[in-house]
Amino acid sequence: MKGICASVCTLALASLLAVPVVAQQRNPRLVATEPGRFTVGICNLRPAGKVNDGLKELRKGIEEREAPKRAEALTKAEAALLQALAATPRDPAGWYYLGRTYLAQGDVAGADSSFTHAVGLFPDCEIDVDQYRQDTWAALANAGIQARQEGDDATAMALFRDANTIFRGLPHVMESLGVLYANAGQTDSATLYLQRAVDIASADTSLTDNRNSAALNLSLVQQRAGRHDDALRILRQYLVWNPDDLEAKRSVAYSFRELGMADSADVIEQDLVSTFSSMNLDSLDLTDLMAVGVSQFNSDSYQEAARIFEIARARNPWNRDAVYNAANTYLAMENHEHLVSAGRRLLEIEPLNEDAYRLIGQGYRGLGRQDSLIKVVERLVTMPVNVEVTLFTVRTNGARWMATATGRAATDAGGTPIPPAPINVTLEFIDEQGTLLKAEAVAIPALAPGTSHELRVDASTEGVASWRYRRMP
Image (cartoon, rainbow, N blue to C red; front, side, top):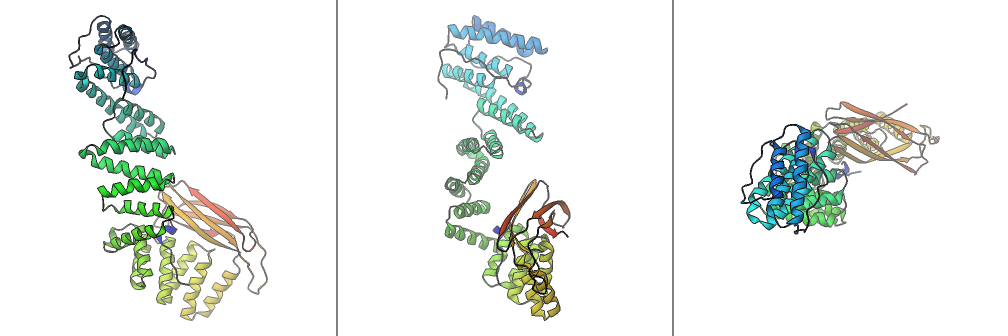
């Protein structure tokens, strides 16, 4: 037996209307950001009649400290301005001050529509209106960030949506909203906002970092949705901007592999490993370090592969793949003493895996330790199931472990068949030092030889780095 596990094993234009838009929803966070001081617009508007009446009530409402009187004044301002615009719908002063009234009331959609009308009728107001839009955008964005920090994603999403309604000239909130939609599993909405962020940032050379970040998030959303053709299109453009980004190249290889283009994925992964091999090993994360070790093993550079796998084991002594790969490397080197040592740790990690017994058995045979070899063989033949771990992934707030249990034709030491029986194991999620973080009971039903049962455990625990399990009596 000579084979090792590669790293994959473990694995944010409106047209003019004849009548005004009636305000619908209010944003209390926006109302709270009003300065409490009225300022005259810098564009050369001449409010008269009902528009002037509305302006007076708007001033009173903005500067009023008592909430009921403030609301009353703003309601009067809105009514006067709507009445004026019903009579003279092309009066930019009416639209401009109606927009400011809606802002003071927290009606973002109403403000957006009214400001758009005002600028369309009187372009000199654009600078003034843009300042209100950006100030409002910033206030809503900051409130949304605070809501996120407090764990209230629903409120953050509502605030970010309003921010993007009032101002669309910067990508930051577009991306943040896209990320929130992605985390909520709303792929289409996430794609929409992240693509908008990319488009906005791409038009301004000062926003390169924002463009890159939004593009990478967009490609990840497409990958999660299984849209790997779209992901590749985005990643290829991204690599034109950032040709040395190794993570992006890794993502390209992943999408190629998911599309069944293994040869294309292999070319990229080999190039990545070559790049990693020329780097300081201490600067590589565990996944990349393992990839370099696998490359060295596959090129028959066993001494170097062993050295790299031992570095990986030193970082995470309970990492199953690092131990398994080291054991196979020692087998290839015929270093039986080190093979036995690695095999013992492998049995501590997964005592129901056939490969672990065969590896340590090879070590004892090479050392001529016949008694120890016999004990290992006896344990193997009496083992009722073989458990093959198929997936182990770590997230920020937890981990997932999956395995396949397959029934074996077990016998006792004398060769008498042992009937299938249920088995209970305790799966332990641990940190890099082997400290137990969470334990989960796993029941394996009685399995006839050759029949299989899928196992899956999810742990909502931070700091998980590895796993191990123990067979219960």
